[in-house]
Image (cartoon, rainbow, N blue to C red; front, side, top):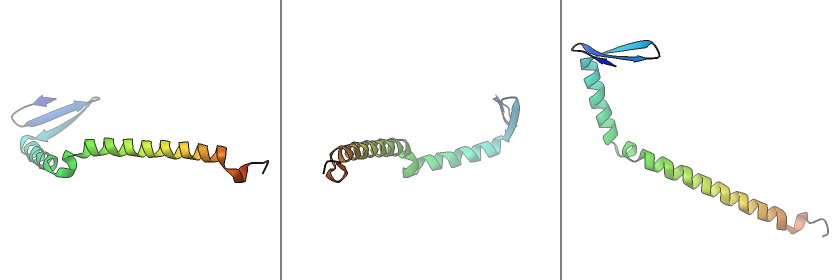
Length: 79
């Protein structure tokens, strides 16, 4: 990354992208405003909780499914 009085050049994998200082400042202000929105503030915590909850529910359903398959009288060949 190169910063000059005219703008910022970001190099990645041999490709450079130039952004004027005015545009960069405008995007930085917009980004800060987005970060202050409640949804984006809590997104990491919410996503982690959602994945944990989904996994816990899936594991519980699998355990119940296995118990039902083993103990279900209608599927017992002797009955």
